[in-house]
Image 1 (cartoon, rainbow, N blue to C red):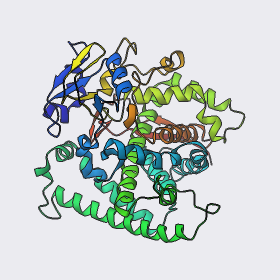
Image 2 (image 1 turned 180 degrees about the horizontal axis):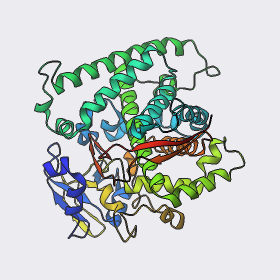
Image 3 (image 1 turned 30 degrees about the horizontal axis):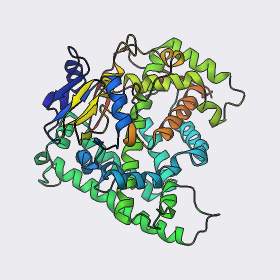
Image 4 (image 1 turned 90 degrees about the horizontal axis):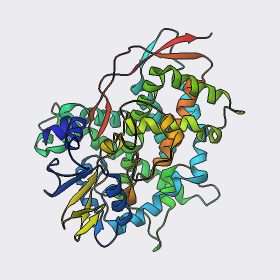
Length: 444
C-alpha cells in the first residue's frame, strides 16, 4: 500500500512483470478490499463497452478520496444517473465554437509568459506553465483578467496544491488522521485555511455573477464558463445551486490547471531533449500559411503526435476511475465477481511493448503511423467517466507549445541534461526534479 502511494510506477511495473494483465491487489486504503488492476487492452475494451450496463457501474462514491480537493458535489463524485445529467450541462463549454473562442486568449497568454526574461536567464518550466494554465482557467472559466480576486484565487490554489504535492503531502491524501488541524503551522491547518479562502472567493464570485447573468439575455451573455453554467438548465428547468457550482468550479481549477501544466512541462522537457523532435516540430510550424491561426495549429499532425506521446509516456493520471462489478461477468476471457472494484492502470497500458515498441523511449512517430483505440490510449481515462476537459487540454497544449517554439525573440535549451523521472505529486505524477530552461538567444 505504501509503495503504491509513494512509488506508484515501481509498484505498477512490479504488478505486471509476471502476469497476463489482470491482477488482484490491495493497494488503496480508501476502496473496498476486492480491488482488481487491469493492463490488458482486450479486458479494458470490454469494460468500456459494458460501462454503465447491468453488470458494471461507475458510482461516484468510489472516487471519494478526491472529495477533499474537489468537494462532495463535483461531477467526479456523482452517482451515475446524476452524473449523466451534469455531464450534459458541462459538456458544451468545452467543445465546438466555445472551445475555438478560447484560442486567441490562450495564444496571447502564452506569448506574454517569457517577456520578462533576458538572454541567459533560466526559469522553472513548471512554474511558468502553471502561470499560463492558471490564467487560462481563471479567464476562460471566470472571465477574470487580473485584479485582486484573480490574484487571491491564484495564490490560494497554488498554496493548496503545494501542500499536497510532496511525498508527505501524498500521505495526507490517503490517511485522514494526518490532515488533523493542529493549528496554523500544521499541514492540516494550512490546507484548511487555503481551502476556506478559495471557498469564500468562489462563492463571492458566484453571487456577483448570478446578479450579472440575471440582467443578460442570450445575445449578450458573457462567454466564460461560469456564466454559461449559471444559465444552463436541465430538462426540469433546474440549474446548479451555489454548492454544486462551487465544487464544479473547484474541479475545473484543480483538474484543468495542474494537469495541463504538468503535461506542458514534460512536453518542453522532451522536445528540447530531442533535437530531431524539435527540428521536425519547428519545420511543421514554420510551414503554416498563417502561424497565428489557432485552428490550423491544432490540426498539425506532428505536433499532435508529440502531445499524444507526452501523454502516453507520462500520463498525468495513473489509473482510470474505478468501476464496480454488480453481477458476475466475463471480460476479455477473465471472470469477475460481484463487488470487484476494477481500474485500468493507464501507466501499465502505455508501457505495453506489444502496443508501443520500446515503450520507455520518447517517439512521436508511433502516433504518426498508427491510430490507437480508446482501450489502448487512456491519457484522459475512458468510458462514461472520461475527462470532460480533454478537448480543451489538447487544444491548450498545442497552442502554448506553438507560441513558445515559434517566438521570434528567443530560443530555449535545457539547463541540464539530467534524466528526469516522474514522481507522485498528490493525485498525479510530475517531474522528480525541476525542468529548467534557458534563454540562449534574445533579440533586442
